[in-house]
Length: 177
Image 1: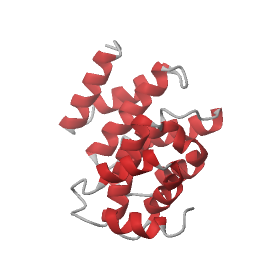
Image 2: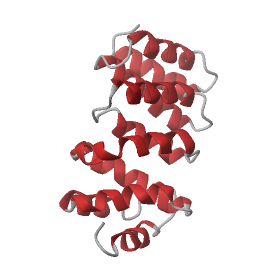
Image 3: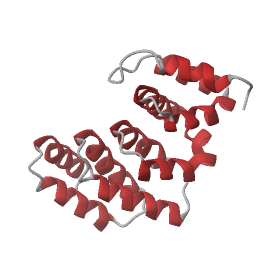
Image 4: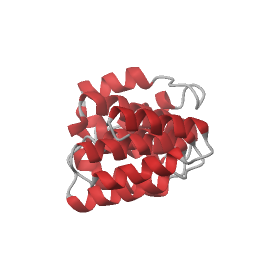
């Protein structure tokens, strides 16, 4: 890790309200320009400050769109964080990265199991992200389509209107009607 990089990243990611993206866009560009910042960024997903975690999760998602390979060496750690962290931003953003990086069969099964469980999460956003992740895994043949269809069915039966609406959109897009 470059000397002093994590405190500098932390200081920038602590700026702004947790509900806002803050410096996430600028930090994402820096990580893309300097991949050595990936590990310090992942470390900040375990920070004590919820705003830092929220902003770091958003950076991970943004970097993951353009360079998901940067997170391949951190797959086990990201899975562990998804399993143990109850902060909704982790539940929303990490699946977006984990579904696009190569995972071995055990890691893929862990991810699928966590995403199925996450459909019952308090956060509609995290639950919706889980549905999208399961659909992606099924459409790429990494899990059985039946797993994703079952999750979609659970969400369609949910009294949470936003979750049911997301399930309908995913089912239509995947032609699982």
